[in-house]
Amino acid sequence: MQRTVSPRQLAAAIGVSESSLKRWADDGLLAVVRTAGGHRRISLPEAVRFIRHMGFKLQQPTELGLSELRSLETTQIEDASSVNEAFGAALEEGNSAKVRAIVEGLYLSGWSVATIIDGPIRQTMARIGTLWQHADWGIMVEHRATELCLQTLSMLRHLMPSHESAAPIAVGGAGPNDPYMLPSLACSITLAEAGWTDVNLGPRTPTRVLANAVGHYKAKMVWIAFSHSTSQSETIEVVNVVSRACEVAGAKLIVGGPPTLMLAPADIPGVTVARSMLELSAFGRGLHAAASRVAT
Ligand code: B12
Image (cartoon, rainbow, N blue to C red; front, top):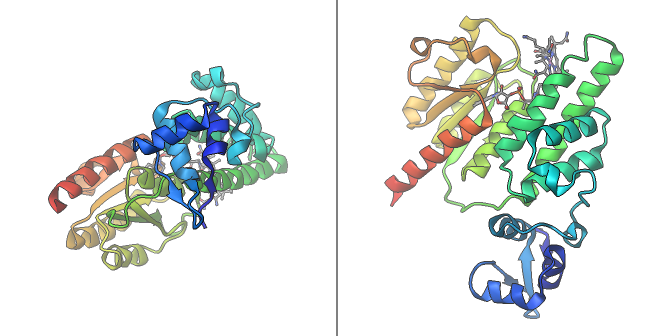
């Protein structure tokens, strides 16, 4: 069941009076539901949306069951290099409470999921990726950091608003033999933020399984995340098989990750190659708007 908070808790969390909050609810700025006994309740994602939309600073996050943001002061949030430094240190030392608090704080202060992934998560993982060559310790840090990022992105999902059930479907996964979990999950959550119903098939997705899923879900958008190093011809083969399924379903295909960056447009006609979650988000929002215009 979705977590809810009372108007009193939300008012205390952002440091306003309960009567102001009730007025904003009556004015339609905040969606409230009523309990069987007639009391007002606010879903946690709606409370988070309201805080982000109105630009409130959280005074007492624990009122909403969120972490105290002691690890990162609000002034630091404005400065990307301070954020990267604080997040990098927390992730490298495996401090899950701090990692969670920083990401919650960034999201509540208005950062998009795509910006959090392209910024502190990507940069820290790239740095941690250089440690494995040194010792078992480096490999442990890398595995622990991957797991912590996976947990943190799942936590973020619970704070995001859910979209209408009629939202178009995007499906995707990592390429066959590709064990990397974070890039495909990042695509999934980024597209959810852009208004899509996302279906992530995860790592090592066989090509025919992904191609069949496009028709099964009547997907309008498909992503493939490539991280594991493969030959160019193998990558092109995978992309072209899925691209044919997309043509039949009327879906757009977008691919990304290091092995795709050297592909020439002529090798994969009609397929978009992108370098970041921000690019994916922009592509997803554009396509979503076009699909909604056709539907109305
Ligand atoms: C975690 C990790 C692993 C984990 C993965 C765990 C898991 N189950 O997910 C494990 C331990 C399995 C692993 C293994 C190996 N790894 Co590794 N790994 C990494 C690491 C540290 C992080 C990858 C990650 O998740 N990043 C987080 C995501 C969010 O960021 P990103 O990958 O940069 O993706 C961004 C963009 O590329 C883009 N993007 C990515 N995909 C997509 C898709 C779409 C559609 C779009 C639009 C955009 C997009 O947007 C993302 C966000 O900005 C990277 C370091 C690095 N630089 O990334 C090394 C790295 C990729 N690994 C490397 C190596 C060498 C290996 C091993 C060969 C090590 C070994 N000797 O065993 C094996 C090979 C495994 C295999 N079969 O391929 C090298 C690759 C070097 C190369 N040029 O090929 C790297 C770069 C580390 C390094 N500096 O040496 N690895």
